[in-house]
Image (cartoon, rainbow, N blue to C red; front, top):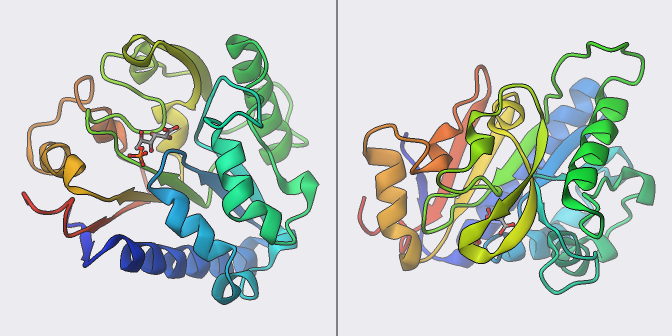
Amino acid sequence: MRPQIYDNPDLLALQAARYLTGIARDSVHSSGRFTLALSGGATPRRLYEKLGGAECREKLKWDSIHLFWGDERCVPPDDPGSNYRMARETFIDRVPVPPRNIHRIRGEMKPSEAAALYEKDLKAFFFPDAGESPGIPRFDLILLGLGDDGHTASLFPGASALHEHERWVVACHVDKIKSWRVTLTPRLINAARHILFLVSGRRKARCLKEVLRSSYRPDELPAQAVRPEDGRVTWMVDTEAASLL
Ligand code: 6PG
């Protein structure tokens, strides 16, 4: 897997915005909608700011775009740690996406209930007419980050969610950060048409090299569990993150 390498975080964000805009345009053209699962943390902030900026805001057909999250911290939506709040502040409040198109994970709820509700929401959105045995939701694009321990979404090293083969969404307690999270499972992530990893900063260099260049051991490096059946994974990184490749 050869990542696309950009000189600095701003160029990285600009290219990611162009990539996302292209997939959005193609998805809306072919299916009438674009289903996007957002990632959290700090790295995507620049990308989200560009989505809310003039270049992207006018290009995207916001009433056909549906926003989801790949994971969420189990905190209220106005908590500084909320991935929803970060997206709302960086672009959602600046674009005309209809509120009904925003499918947030309810971090304010009990984690297991939030996970069950989100999975129910996904089923209702992707399979509105299905009976008890729907297929599996295929997001047009899932954005993912990379933690310096190899985690992605809220799939952390050693997580039982890495071996979840039925559920699409699970709640997990992350001992390392003493927090509850709700996350998509690898099964759902790997059903996506497109997956974009965004990685920035020297702090990620060692882990990025491990994930991309060392042996397959997803329990230690959960980002390696992202291997879609017939989707496409793209890595966009800056030179700092790529410095050990
Ligand atoms: C989250 C993210 C998480 C993130 C990585 C990298 O909820 O925090 O989904 O997987 O992408 O932890 O975070 P940074 O971009 O802040 O380094």
